[in-house]
Image (cartoon, rainbow, N blue to C red; front, side, top):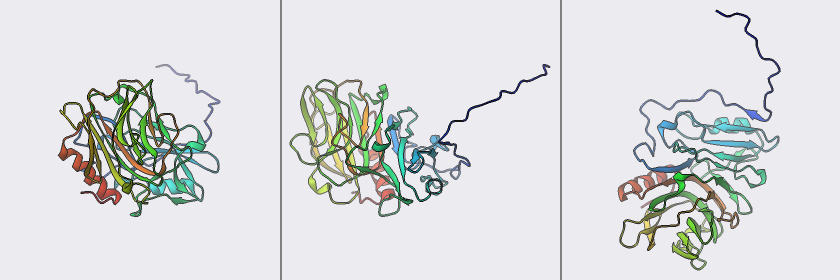
Length: 310
């Protein structure tokens, strides 16, 4: 056997980088929201959504005082490990650098510009729902997260978008795909301003949307927003559900636009009209779900985030 191993010297260790330790595995037999549902495009959350994603990071955060970054995973209850987060942040604030995609497709949502990163801790205090569950704060000025284009985002025949969010100002985007020519595959926007409202698509310079009533915006409350598109339906193939209730429908006569554009959380297709509010969970499926599957998701989210769902 060969001897005389040579040990490399002068390794350079990156600065402002903290490696998490002591990953915690949930109790054996634990199941998560998305364990029994397939056809995921993306899944972002401040909790564990799939048991196949155990011991992986949910988010990457930046500490405000020195810009050091760290990955934060889940605890044994499948919740965001807020103890590790707050221990790392101390009396400082924390901002989201990355929301990791739990779908397995690698469609991570990121923001490299510090000034544009949503907040999750404010001066040592966790940003949260009224029931104590953490959330991300979007300041309505420039905060957003960007998901580069991937084929798994290109859902031209059917899709379902499920979001838990709070909006403080009407006329702002919760999410959107970027524009290409005169086409936007899909978007979710609050505020009754003409046709650019609700869950919809922009194809060949024309908006087709399902309106979100103003009663669901600027009320200081979190809501469940679900947009569904299914080209197989003869009519009313574009649907909007708010807190489990089908509030509006419309019809897309042909498939939504097939364009290779990124996904944006918290802003419009150009990066403007940014969300003033909060967001906790975004799940996108590459197919429309049946009513039972949709309701299971809505009710699970409602129970977890303290949202009253029909």
